[in-house]
Image 1 (tube, rainbow, N blue to C red):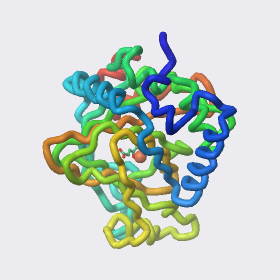
Image 2 (image 1 turned 90 degrees about the vertical axis):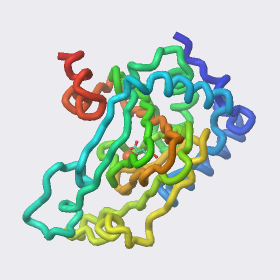
Image 3 (image 1 turned 135 degrees about the vertical axis):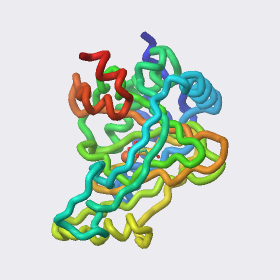
Image 4 (image 1 turned 60 degrees about the vertical axis):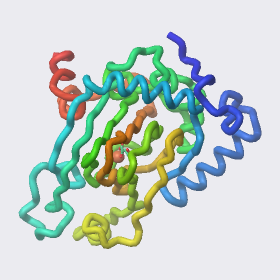
Amino acid sequence: MNDDASDLIRLDLYPIGDRANPRRAALVERFKADLDARQVCVLSDFITKEARQRMIGDALAILPKAYRNRSHRTCFLNRNGDPSVNENHPRNTFFDASYRMMAYDLFDADMALPRFYRWPAIRELVADVVGAQRLFLNEDPYQPANVVAYGDGDQSTWHFDRGNDFTVTLMLQAPEAGGVFELAPEVLDDDDPDMRRLADVLQGRSRDVISVDRVPGALVIFRGDRSAHRVSPVKGDTLRLMCVMVYEPKPGVVGRPEVNATVYGPRTSQARA
Ligand SMILES: O=C(O)CCC(=O)C(=O)O
Ligand SMILES: [Fe+2]
């Protein structure tokens, strides 16, 4: 298996193959500072145009096998409300989500996207930016790198990436309109059981929400654990195609079949039963 993805990266802008390169160190410092200040950093023009076109072509070929995911949930991903708090509380505020999910096993191992995911220089860069000592590949058959397709009217719910210190995404194709990534940095406050700041975000009256420019070809790293975020409704016929990658703090991590079944469809729990 070929794990080299140097041909896919704009190495002229991001000399990440050489850990001793001082330009790499300067980039790491810049993105670290962005991540600390805003909970998100954007590495524009990270992949070449050819690489992006290849990744889009592969994703569109796989799309008929994607799992159509629809749900109606709170930002904590609960399906039921909480009668012990008032009706405007975040625990009682529901959102619709719909998109098509392409699991990792649908991609051939030698396609551009899995190669990108596996190239050690990428996870070394991510580790340096997020301040992790070392990062490892996720070893689940479905989770490591996914492409999520949002068509006209699709959106995600407001949510947190609970349990993940950071999330890595690569924007492949932007929609004609909508599909904006919105992030409310560190909106949870342990001292406020009413979650007023979060309620303002969910009700669309917060000034703390930032819209992150998701230009195709950009690698975006964000901390979604305590920062609510969503993809706003997509408009138009061009699909929003986003790759989401998972790197782990320890080797050998796999997902739980019952969780995979809700994300990737029932076929994934049957395959592992
Ligand atoms: O598609 C995006 O811009 C964000 C994806 C996201 O929230 C996630 O993967 O957790
Ligand atoms: Fe997320």
